[in-house]
Image (cartoon, rainbow, N blue to C red; front, side, top):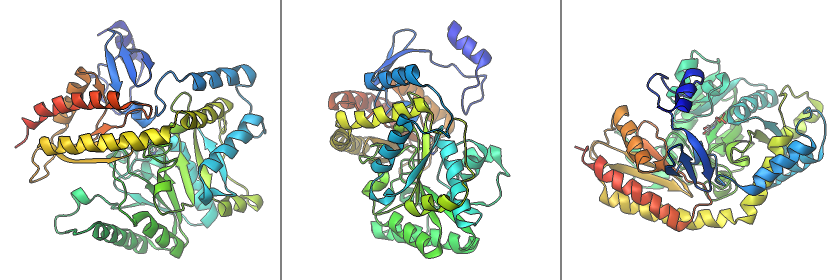
Length: 437
Ligand SMILES: Cc1ncc(COP(=O)(O)O)c(C=O)c1O
């Protein structure tokens, strides 16, 4: 292990891991869709650093914007108005489209605290206290966001914050055995039924907000079936519940549209965002409130605040990123290459028995691996970790959840680069196929 890695292990705590066995790769530089380790080895960045670096590495416009802001006014408290603050807010509210006309934004530092503040907005606006979210979800690792999270990463924070309840969101591939779907409409109807049941059981008049990742990200890249979000919104409208869409991972063209919700028939009350707003060049997140909620705070005090809310460095980066998405034609690139990704993944699924299901939307995909296609049995954790290591060994850097491999490259990737990288995955799957029953 190199000196840098050893020192890192000595002083850093790396996320979500028992520290002893870690052997962190030392990264020395990054450019475009690639990064390099200290031995000069090049990696395709095939999950964009936790689905964050949508514009890839080394984007000059972003770097210049941050440098210029650092020169002019790196920080001033969130209570002051300044050019970059006003312009950034206008830009993101407009980016959110008609659902947020007349709306406002509250800027945060990242995704978890965007959700923390969205929880408070729901409670402040409705006067209610319960919050519902999917079991199959991740919303951040701070204490409230952990309670909001449905999957196992919430356990360490439990018993957690009172008032948080979970329901089963759409996941047709792993639906209960006794449930059979003939059509997509059956899937929608079944899972809306599950949601409705949860609402009634928890008391429709007690629920302040229902949180959903528009497209579930780290729990499998699960796009909602047609009509699901519209149906969820109808239920929310009926019972006076706020529908909050978490776009922290799915936003900023990852799925092909500005926010993922723009391609579904839904007008959320609140949207949370982070990652792709600055592509990780500096931290930023935010909460978008529709007009009625924003107006509510004209007369009612807003009990939300952060020292770093609307930090000028983050806002300068966000403005530059939004301009770059436009200048580089990212929406068109994702549309085109999303088609290529779908085609290659479908072809791989036809040839590799270890693929249970490959799911994709835009340049956001997950390949769910199974030990047996027949029983859908998952591989154990060490095997999945081995697959990630095999990929990394061949220069395909990504991460996994318990059964799936994330494929979500920077949105600037070219067709040739995408095909080259997927050819590496294809090769590794030859090895994984040998481990199936
Ligand atoms: C959907 C979703 N929400 C929230 C978060 C938390 O964001 P952060 O890690 O910036 O706090 C994540 C992080 O991956 C996420 O994927």
